[in-house]
Length: 296
Image (cartoon, rainbow, N blue to C red; front, top):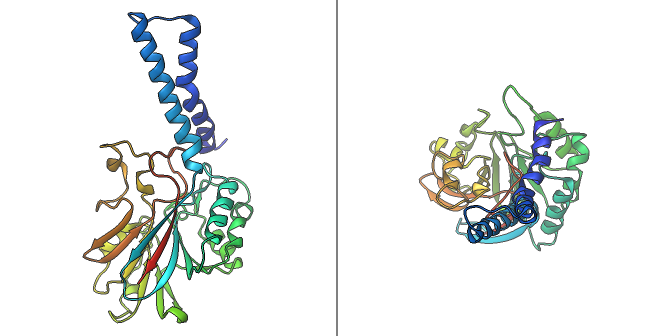
């Protein structure tokens, strides 16, 4: 059995273990020093277990929408999602829920999927990703580090073939032009995979309306002269398990990107907190999010 699928099952036991321990202590009437300390310890175990159960089963399956207005000089309505991580920790059922949520949003110009489509998938990849074909808006997609891992699993060609059949725009260091919006979209390869060719941005002038999609927000600090009006990213998961004072240490960004809008010397950057999970199948304090971005 794949290690990540095993971890998925083990996490269920982890979530309920403190509760089971509290029940055991109650039945066996085990005392620690005195009765009241034992009772308080049992209450702590129950509350801790409830927190684990919430972060394992409830929050990861609760999709929210967040709407943000951004001054860019051009007008559009963009839906941004990232880090779907379809595979070990996220089911096709969750993907269906996300697609239905997006399709319920009115007047969307296009959808951006900012990388990490899969995460150690098991089974037929086309079947796992099939709900994506039901998106009713144009889709622009780039890969992330888990889609094109160096010297490990590389799903690039398979994902490219699948999403091309869905009539998505697969972008890797190339661009597309949306005539109705007078807008160029550049999609970059993944920074961690060493595939990001930022020179593709330099062909555009400051007078062009330009949106760049880059899985890792740190990519913006590789930009040279040309600065887009907006870069759309993911990768960070917003910390995923937001334990106060600790979670920021584990966010994979050298430049302090977390989630939301940033004004940087390389232009405005919007970072999605993502849909799926990595490392552990838990989310706490940062539920799966569909970002609705109104540029103006």
